[in-house]
Image 1 (tube, helix red, strand yellow):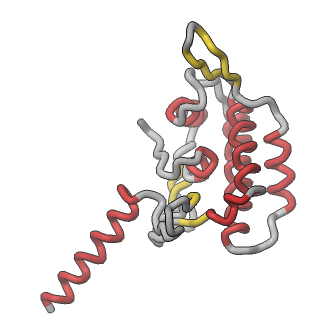
Image 2 (cartoon, one colour):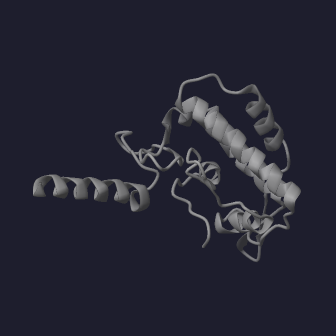
Image 3 (spheres, rainbow, N blue to C red):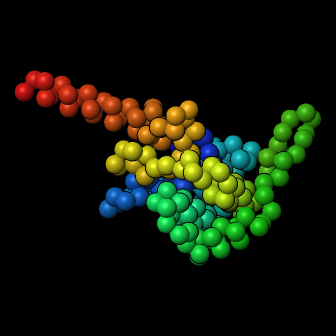
Length: 182
């Protein structure tokens, strides 16, 4: 598996395909059309990798950045950027991924644009619904992953306890050990 899905929400995991976005050199996980196709399969949105080209990749990055800009504005309690709203609404208006029942099993099929439409629709539902109040950004300074804080007390700090939470806690432990030794 090439891609990570720490959020449990596909549009927000899709935003995370640009890692450490505030760093001087962020890590682009969608660095070629095949990586985009693989993302849809690894996410479980499509059963087979859709054909993708550079134009499809450019559209995907535009959808991703529109979602991020809207989520970031929501988290910071700022007005939503009109251009990002228009772009996300346009993407969500396309046909979504097709679900079919074949011999008693579910099959998911579609194109890159249909996958993007499904992501955009889910992002619109999050941003325009009650879950918008649950949007958070990971508390680890190097991470810019966004997620929905559905924890019981709404005090979740990290995109994933396995990665960022563990790193923060291990770092704090090491720092306490150094301070105690000094």
